[in-house]
Length: 184
Image 1 (cartoon, rainbow, N blue to C red):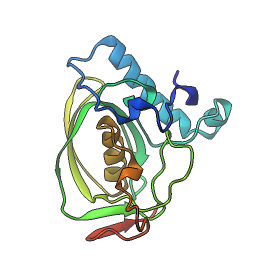
Image 2 (cartoon, rainbow, N blue to C red; image 1 turned 90 degrees about the vertical axis):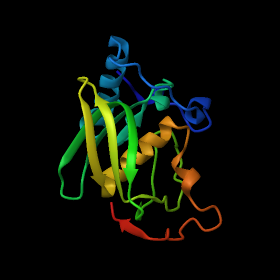
Image 3 (tube, helix red, strand yellow; image 1 turned 90 degrees about the horizontal axis):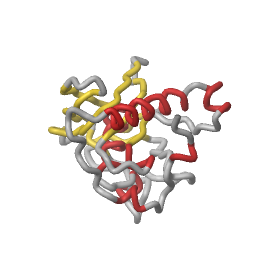
């Protein structure tokens, strides 16, 4: 079981490396790691389990955050209508995106970053992602709004990019051009 002790913190070199593709079909070890990642994200959102295991609530986790240099992400989040989306994915790749941007008005947080880093993080408003599920199925999904932001945050981790790298250093709360604010 993954716990907060397994999450590497800001400054750890694993967070700045570009993760390697998972050779498919994935090995049993990789499948187990990815299954534990999605279990962690789900558990972190359960108030009883989160308190019991001292988990910070999260909506996503990327393998580099647990010091595994592989292109694997786990996401368990609701869209604006309250529909729950749960994904455990190998080799996710953004294959297209909108010109229009979006950003969370509350800013972004990260399980690997203990302090709040204020500022707007510009993201694409809509993205299309191809990936392979834990069960080995190839999927092609279109995402918008909050889910698109979560996916971009986790895929950034696979490329050694942290959310605060996108924040305007001179003016952290400057609204990004051509961007839709998303309340969360």
